[in-house]
Each structure stands twice: as structure tokens, then as C-alpha cells.
Amino acid sequence: MKKLLTPWTCFKLILILLFGTFITSCIQDEIEPNQENLKDMVIEKFNGEVVNGIVMLSNENYLKTIDYFDDSKSKYDEIEIQRTEMCTFDCVETPYAIYCGWVGDCGGGGSLGDGGDNPPDSGDPDGWDGGDSGSGEGGPGGGSSGGSSSGDSGNNDADSDWPENTILFANVSDPKITNVTTYLKCFNLSQGAKLTLYVDQPKANKSDTWSVNPNPFDPIDVGHTFISITQNGITRTLGYYPTSGTIDPSEGVISSPSVIRNNEGHAYDVSISVSINGLQLSSIISNMANYNSTYNLNTYNCTDFGVSIANAVGMGVKDTSGTWPYGGNGSNPGNLGQDIRNMALPSGATRNTSGGTAVSNKGTCN
Image: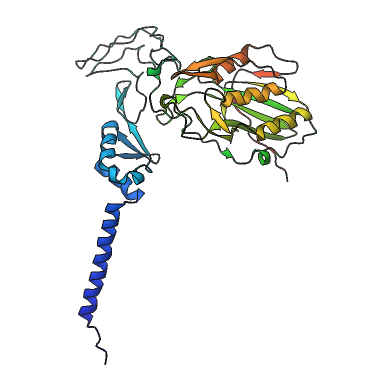
């Protein structure tokens, strides 16, 4: 006859099983914590804060986490962490500003003058824009006095003006086009169309190749060049990009696999449009569908892509080269925008120098 377990014995067995499961779980997390647990640890232990899904840490605490989680580095590397520092903007401490070089030093109570607290022009990150002469006095902590009426000229090419570890195009929201041929299939290749070359300059109506962007998650603006085609109520807009989160000139990373994105509604500063025939339309659609698979900030970027399409149909735009920090040089939206503004238009071409937003995509087909 089998001996039945008493209720007390069953209860003890259940407790042992539960305790064993708990211990195993703890050991597992200690040996190889999952991403969410590790993220929570970073936030709690190192005074982090989540902003737009990214863990924000001071530079000091960021370095501490590397040592602390060295044994779990493979998991730690999966967490999106941004190093930050407090900086002063208009005498107010502002967290999460990655680039703080141009915002001034208010010291221990000093204030910027009436005309000295204007942010600099985009291309002049060292200098304060003019205005009334500053009259503020430096505080006891060594704050600066008010700015001058003109400000320093700044240096658009200085490496020190472009923060290290700045990823370009890290915050692009325009949708990726996975199949360019399908995206452009609605056009009738036996008919004419209108081709428009759009230029979003880093600084409107200036040849500057880059500018400071107050957005801490995208602190450097290098502009963008893109294309639209319109035919019989059908419109498609597109541009050429690197893979997001890859380009960092300060680290020598200037190339990556390229992607094409839908740029409908994208802001621009200047554009030029021409009419093209069916043969030209067929040629440029073929070129777009077989775009260069490698983006290179210096030798083949969005402007190279746009200019090559435009000039293949006789638009005749110049391709002026510019320079930027960390040895960068090549085609760029700043120079291209100025070239378009100043060029003699080919017959039948139109130009918009007022800017705006690019046309939305229109029309469908089977």
C-alpha cells in the first residue's frame, strides 16, 4: 500500500520548489542580466534618466558604468545610452545638451548683456550675433560680461566647433523606401514629367556646409538634397541617405550602406524644376533604382545623388565643393543652394528661392 504524502509534506515541497526557482532566477540575472533589468540597474545606480527611449547619463557616470558592468558587456552594449553634460544656455543650466561650446559662460551669477545673449549664426558657432552692446557684468564665479555688438566671426571649419562622437543623420524620421522600382512604378515612361531638385541648406541662403542644431539628439545639421517627380497627378519624392546612426567624421567613419527615403513634406530653402521627356524619365528612374549602394560623406552623398540625377537631364547645376571639420570636403547642400540661386536658368526651368516644404506624394496605381 502506497503511503500518501501529508499536507504538511506537500507544502514543504512546494516551498522548496519555489525557493529553488527564485534562487535560480537570481543567479541567472546575476550571471547574465537581461537588457531591461540591466537598463533599470543603470538608471537606478548611476542616476540615469530615460529621454525618448535613450538612457541619459553624465559623462562621469557613463564611464563608471563601463567598469561596473564589464562582465556583462555584451548585454550592456545593447542599451541605448547617451553621454551628456550640463551646460549653460542663457544663464540657465540645461541638461542633455550634447553640444555646449557656443552657449556662453555665466559663471557664479554673471549675466549676458542685452545684445550678447543671442545665439550665434549657424555657421559661426564661436561667435555671438550682433545686437545692442551687452551690459551684463561677470559674476563672482568668473562669468563673462555682455557680448559685443558684432561677436566673433567664428570658424565653420574648426574641428573644435564640431563636437566629437556626433552621429550625423541619427534622428531621421523620413520613411525608408525598401523597393525604389515599386515606389516609382506609377509613372508612364512613354510620357514627359516634371523633375524638381530640392535643397535644404544648413543655413538658408548661405554656403555654410554645416550648422549647429539646438536639438541635443541631432546637434549638427549638414542639410539635405533630394528629388521629386510629378506626372499627370502622380508625385513621388525621395532622397539618398546613409544608414542611420553610422556617420561620425570625428571617428573617421564617413561611409556606410546607403538607403533611399521618402522625403515628401521635407523642408527646403531653394529648388529648381525642369520638364523632361519620356526617354529622360526612363533613364533617371533606372538610375534611381540602381543607386550607389555605398554612401560616403565626402565622395558620394545626398548632393552627389541629386546633382547626378538633375544634370543627367540637362539641368546644368554646378557642383561646388565645400569643406567641413575632420578633413571633410565634397558636394554639399550649402554650396548647391547658392549655386542654384545664382545660376542662369536653362530654357523652360523654374526656380523657387523662398523655400517651404516639398510636395506630398500623390496618386496611386495598380
